[in-house]
Image 1 (cartoon, rainbow over the protein chains, first blue to last red):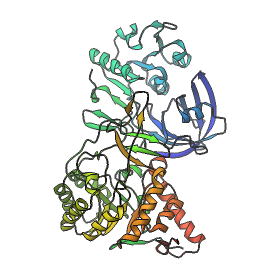
Image 2 (cartoon, one colour):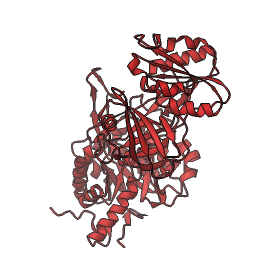
Image 3 (cartoon, rainbow over the protein chains, first blue to last red):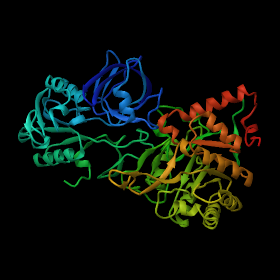
Image 4 (cartoon, helix red, strand yellow):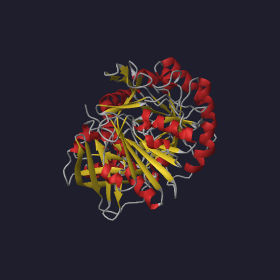
Length: 254
Length: 303
């Protein structure tokens, strides 16, 4: 079941120069939400954009009816959100899309590049409940791009890669030494070249890999057919068949 | 209670608000948000004889007060529709109209003939105005001769309500309207999207994979409204008006200009409850203005 509902901004917490953690609270209790699902957000008071904007659900606190979004400031809507005030109203259509598979009692790796960590926090919480052995790998250009490392560190063994070597191993996230270990399952979100490299690593290891894709969306509910990606079954909507796909389903040249 | 019912040909619609093709899937996508039975009707995604994968990504970009799309009629074909979709929507208490597209007259005819057999599909909307396919589509809707040919051919095999959806990408839409009226169309819907484009100046490339796409949303409303007004004066058959309708006030403008009914399209993407809110808003307006029936409003513009 999908809902349209107003939420009140209850937390605006700058994470670094251009990322903000946003807490959005509903008057009513939240429905079940899977990690990897997303919201379509609109700002009714000012409509900085014409269409809604999709954002991954970063974290959920059911007792307080609060959803958390990790916002990277890139355009008008995200600028508004990064400078929102407590009490501002946003309208959400949620929860949308297919989430990640929740493994049990497995050794799993979660890899997040830059703002790609957004859907991985709630995923890590759910995987922890399922008694998985969790490895978390965060990557970025510099240490400034490593988001919420302390929070992730509480949920699993934390590994970091930066391209300039300012934090953790120097180099691309996909070349980090922890990837030499054996895992049962890979989860990844980040820029597409990183996801393709993770898919190649998973294929080499012969293990499943799920990635969360980003795409331009109009409706977010499978009606407009704008946000397609090429899969083995043909063009499929990222909003309804994804945003999480098993990399074996994707027609990626890897 | 103001009366919202309208008549198009032999069909009675409980209200003048329909959801537009390509923005409403097969209705099923919207059932979490609205009761489909409250709609005057809805028009399905464009349906072709054979399955179509549509155009490559990127297919969409936002533009000022609107959006460009180049979906390219992605659909699973008419046989899939009949086998898998029709059973799920046939018992709805609203008019389900199938949008029919093709790349040749034979294809349009074949799809229409199959749909003519479905008792619970009371009408088709002939899409001779899709700007996003290489062959057919808009090509049929931009000359009087080809618009007449495809309407004539479909009319021969389709006995229910035949609506023809017109393209705004023409010099004089009233000529096309008169041509399809003469070939037996029961009603017209106008307008489809306006051909447009957007460029990524950093990459110096078009934003859409197909270079050009169809512009929709409030950006096109004044153009669509003008065309409905012109066409209303040129033909006798009913007009279903669409193009950037976001709320009841927009809908009432189209009705005053001569539309018997209206379709909301892009609005559904932003607010999935748009159609219901438009119905409520029209009702409120009639009550407030002390107008007994929406039919009295149709074409009542004074100028």
